[in-house]
Every structure is written in structure tokens, then in C-alpha cells.
Length: 238
Image 1 (cartoon, one colour):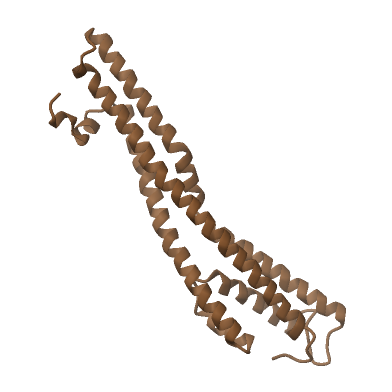
Image 2: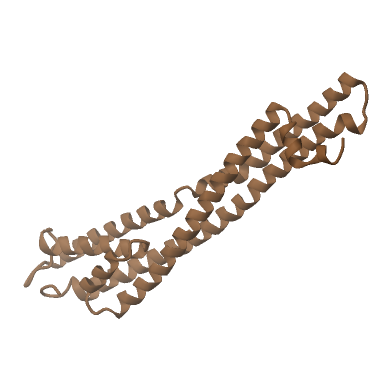
């Protein structure tokens, strides 16, 4: 086999149907994984940036309604969305709910009930945001775990083809063995090429998501402290 015959494209085009199918399947995993990696990278980068900006606005603002107006302009921030849901629940309680805080208002039991309602809303909002951030990320774990074995299947098949060629020709020369071995090595390399970035991407994104989840819980606790100390006991609303 000449140098041209050992070209990667000639190896793939001359591979058996099973090996070509394996490589096509690995191509699907690769394209999908890289698409998810790019989408999630920019999504989480925007989420962290806008959440940092909102945190600054929230602590500098003296009025929660101002923070709420700013939060509506930060659609990429999970933290702003969690605050918006908590703020709307608090507003609903003040206006209509049984635990509403009215001038001259609610009993201590109603006040605690109001805090619990807001707390439940914040918890649900955090769970929703974590679910939103983790969407598609498990596919990277699936790709990282399965593609080496898919490539290994192609490797085994390529070696089987090599032995079959030896059996048909009765010769173990390089010209007989090389095509099957080449197919096997290409399948192995392709499986690893898909798995490595997928595993790295999965670990990176899960770490970033855990950091954001911690920030959401911390912000939720701070927001509830503000409600308990300043808003719920107050007579009248801001």
C-alpha cells in the first residue's frame, strides 16, 4: 500500500460498512457535543456576568421595586429570575394573600406564613434554574462514557477484518493486514477524540453550575433575611 493509500480519507472510504457506520455515529456524537459545549459556554458566561451585575444593583438599591425593574432587563441571569419570582410572591402576599402585610396588619403567625410562602417560591425557582442550566449537559457525560466503547467496537471489527483477509489470502503480509489495522486505529482515535472534550466539558460545566447553585441559595437566604427583618414586620409597604 502506497502513501496515498494510507491517507486518512482513503482509509475511511475503503473501510468496511460497519467501521464507516461507527465513524458516522462518532461524528454525530462529536458534532452534538461541540454544539452543546459552545451553547453552554456562552450561556453560563452570560449567566455569571449578568448575575454579578444584578447582585451589585440589588445591594446598592434601597428599594426592591427598583431592583425588580432592573431584574426584568437581565433575562440571562438566573439570580435575577429567582429574585423576580420571590418579589412577585411577596407582592402577591402583601396585596391578596392571607399572610399579606397590610398597614396595621398581619398577625405574627401570618407574617411567618408569608415568609414560608416566599421561601417555597424561591426554592422552586432555584430548582427550575438549576434544571435549566443542566439541560443538555448530561449528553456530554453520555458521550464521554460511550464513545470510547463505540470506537473500541470499530477497532475489534477492523482487527476481525484483518484476520479474515489473512484467512482468505493465506498471507500475513503488511499489504493484507494494514487496511484492517488502519481502520481499527482510526476508530479508536475517533472514539477518544469525541470522549476527551466531552468529559472535560461535562466536568467544567457541572462545576460552574454548582457554583451558581450555591450563589442562588446564598442570595435566597439573604433575600429572606431582608424580608424577615425589614419587610414583614413593617407596617405598610414600600
